[in-house]
Image (cartoon, rainbow, N blue to C red; front, side, top):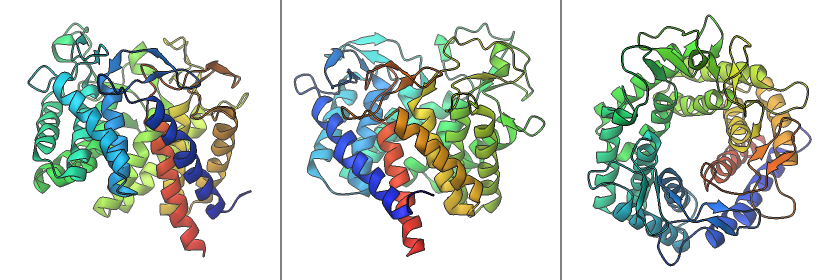
Length: 393
């Protein structure tokens, strides 16, 4: 390693608290209508005022989590509460069916088709209830979590475009996010209920979507857990798989399951080697497991969240197993991410690069990128690096 763990910890901490968080604190809150602007250009100017419920939830969660785990900063708590109150008032239909997007003043634009509006609402209100002790926030989190579990077999419910019964596929994203969500709202759940949910999610992620016959994680399987030789069935998202692995590592620690940790580290390294672009560096966005032409035209782009989540998984993998391969890959991905995604002239990081690593869009936030992966990744990496530095001293 060119830098010590102590130096790296300071680098990640300074980027989080000196650049990224101040950007969102200053540019994102809508002081007139409530909630947050997420469509921010390179310098933080608002270029669209629509509000996307899952990104609103992520930002509430972010500032609540930092308040709970870093410092009782009243500005962070105020920022989180204002976002949560906007969501509570406008984000759902009255029965905690969470819309996908809203106008600036909270009028619904897109119906509650996206399950991730629900998962991040649950995360947001769960974390904020811990920060405030507010029972109403806790109730919203629990009710929303129950709806998520009830829709696990058909996440899009009546908004599902697929014709039922012809090609019923299960998607990796929901069990993956539930691995993380379950721990996020653990204090609000009955222990037996929590453990049952965790076991189900771990089984789905590590025994169903991970395919030992291929050595990789697939994004979709049939209803009876078989591979499907279709566009959706061949679809791979290396970043998704790698992100899920640090969720599994956290669960492995929580459960005292060394087998879960070791398997998650193995899969992290395998998916990273599989998804790494040997020609230009960086990790491909999408791939086809048979090498067929991918359906998605953006398949070869390099995205911010893929690389940030990979850094977390590699550091956690190294901390838990001390496998040198994790550290070697961390240095490689760290060098790529900091030299390509970090904007050296303005705060926050770029999100979208072409295959060659050139900036495609200079935005700092939009419909899909908000106050989440970069600050969460910097926080997680800083925390692990701090603990590794302490082990060295």
